[in-house]
Length: 279
Image 1 (cartoon, helix red, strand yellow):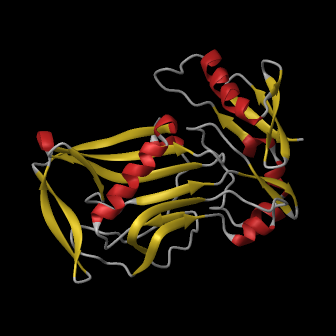
Image 2: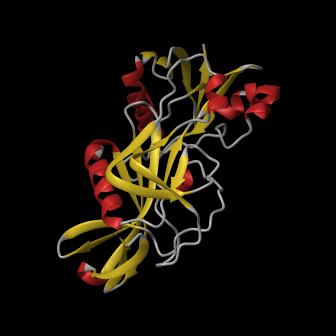
């Protein structure tokens, strides 16, 4: 899987670099919640729109005034709290996580932040094998949504730590693939891991509801996911079909239905793409 296969969110931020903090932050006690903005939820007919909460022990600061409720970035923290939280998160979803390696950095030591009288300070920690790694974790949640985490990983004296990259902070994104139902309603889709979507909360809700073009099947036609183990067309179709078996998948080899959040959808598997339509 490559990061380009996930919806790219172009959110401009000045982030934590080294020991200097350029952003105002807000504290979060024991948890950070990512969710779909209320106006989008109000345009749905379901009562409980799925979300995600990262839990931890203590206080973690996130960058203030990030407008997207499905995205957050961490800054000015005691890194061990966030590292422990990510360790637990990745262990919890060990059966449904994919780690993308972005780059390896040759470093004998790297900075690890802590708070001293409320002020960010850094200590140097040794890197086993004189390396650390920029990575992205992609997680398939049990509620049908997908989550990504951007971070740097290093091992020191045999212990794995997760921290900010030298280029940007630890960031978490929750992905919401949407479908237009009518001029007053949208609904939520669930997609197999690695599948990119076109309609989501990065678009204005008013545009999705107003523009009839968002009824077009082109917006809900998706490229198959492929990797070293999913190569042939049969592999790609089987990957899609297998995913929807958890959602009451019923139908023939190339066309079937599935249920998600009180709605039934039809999947049509084609030669190079597959299409989802609402029944």
